[in-house]
Length: 184
Image (cartoon, rainbow, N blue to C red):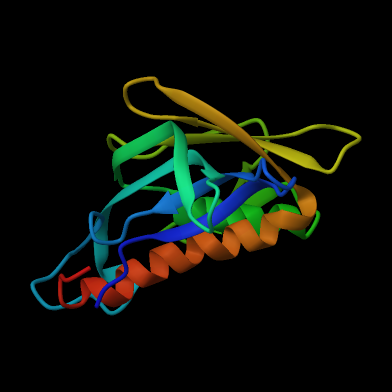
């Protein structure tokens, strides 16, 4: 059975009787990973487009052990050409104390892209991301804007960047593995 959701807890308040949490939820069954060829994709080089579905919402704990939805803050029903894999890499770079992404194009030219305070734009009707670091603190703000100009922002402490990056990478890798049969 394929997963219906993959969650990451962005914030959590565990005060007894008032437990709340803010979740980033990825929906693998609703998301797609398209290959360049008719054969199943085995690597990201064989993928030409992804279309991911995810949301950010809050939950509260009811009187029992169940979590109930409180409010939906950001819902992306089609993150076309999603850059969450790139954001995962940015999280790791920032956690290592660097602020630039160094990459090579198809012609072998080296490029440097600033990670902070730079709008990272998707190629398609997807979500654009801006990461800002509050100076003299260990907090990063993530601002998200979809193709309809609906936005949302959340913060993460520096010590949670790697785990958020690992989570986003896990979502992408899950899609690649399960896209081989086009069953996610």
